[in-house]
Image 1 (tube, rainbow, N blue to C red):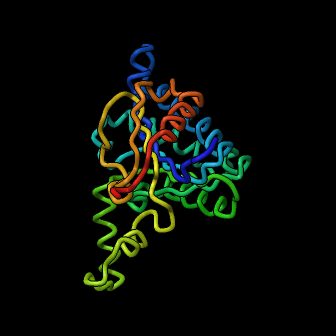
Image 2: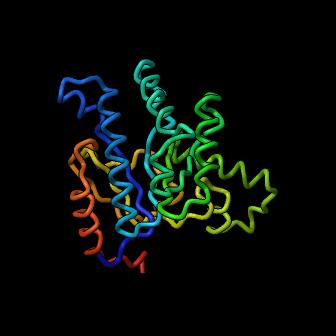
Length: 228
């Protein structure tokens, strides 16, 4: 496959709706969603994609019912355990982005530990957006600029990126949203200026590697001229 994007970002929407359709608990939808994320990560690496960003938990998701949040974070605890085999067996790099410092100490420690033990891995880089918001990233980026005493008269795109959550990542050429809704949902606002956005009507747990390849084929047919 030619013209593979270097960086693909995914809004993994539809876990809860998938569970409701099957008369299951919402957490069962999230469990299946994690399995889908693993499958798409492996396929991304196989296809030569260098980096993916997965929207796992937004800053606004704290408005969800407390019991659902607690169950979801229990899933995160398991996935982000130091002994997690998924990242080590596949030599994937784990990079959490978002307001990580505001999370509780237990999960924060797991996130940092997993980041540290995978930083020298050689294959796919997986940015996991957790406690993340695009507007919040812009705010935090400007705080970083102020703290670094950057002269705002000298501010340019490269400097802005340097102080963002993704300082060394290329902007995503492609953003995929599952679940059928046509909105960006406060995702990667600093990085999506020229991203192609393709919507899948599939709910995330039903999204397959064949669906992924189909979207990549659609992406390859798009002429990208960045406003020229």
